[in-house]
Image 1 (cartoon, rainbow, N blue to C red):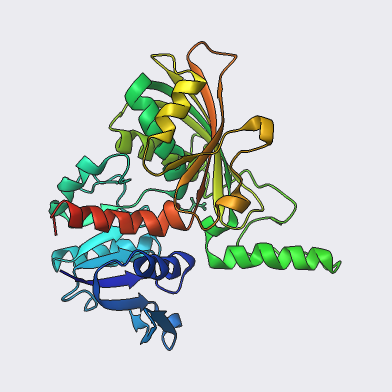
Image 2 (spheres, rainbow, N blue to C red):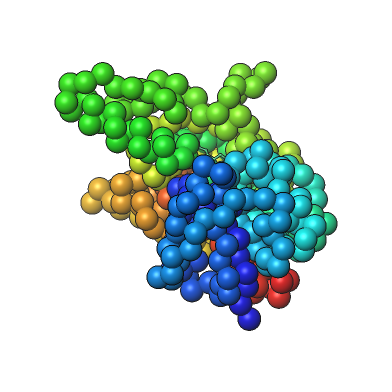
Length: 338
Ligand code: 11C
């Protein structure tokens, strides 16, 4: 069987990667419908060698579609995803619009595949925030074994999380610096080249950024642990497209470094890259373009008897967004839910 697939936000960094991944994984696409805003009309996308004109996203766009992959921002999702769902099209939404909706499953296929069955109420499945995905994929096998009580995460987030324009801004600033010109900021509030910005998204009343609270809310929902203690600090770094997260956990049962390596090595979606003596550890430069979360710097925490620290790196555009969304569609097919 093959499926009609709409991609909303097709001209963005994630939308473009979605097309690539659908093609790479040989996803059974019958008809591809590339959708975007008025601004992108006239643009052409290439899919399986065929040139397809971009259509304006409208209330009519989803008739006859089996899947709609949304990556056009939360307000577009709020406006169009429920309509698409009502038409019988299954929406996989990359925005934050529905992640906390109790009638919408929030899925990482390696972590909580069972929760996907609850999608029928709205026909919408939410794709988690990229930073949450890169953090939680390696935590799942550790939680299953030792039960995590507390998580302290610090992210090092690439420009790609803020979209294609943000990646361009980083490249432009590097060139401006090289030519001795003034660096111009637009997407980011400050220069990102040769800098770190300890703000991702807006600040909330509790002085956390929204990105940091998304880590908290989404981790609890995906892990099915509403009381999990978790805190995060999210930082934008001058890296193009892979997010890195330093994660410290405290577990009920002690997890040794060897046990953690054994558990992580056996878990789908994780590649362990941990050989400090030979300077082997994951870095965003090498993980860009890869599918798995790469995990290294695994060590027992000397400050806490059942503490463990690790370093996880994942391609933000792939596993953090486009790939996870397509894996959700594959999971629906595999479970014969579509
Ligand atoms: C970033 N994580 O790196 C953000 C982008 O909730 O899907 C994704 C925001 C989201 O800027």
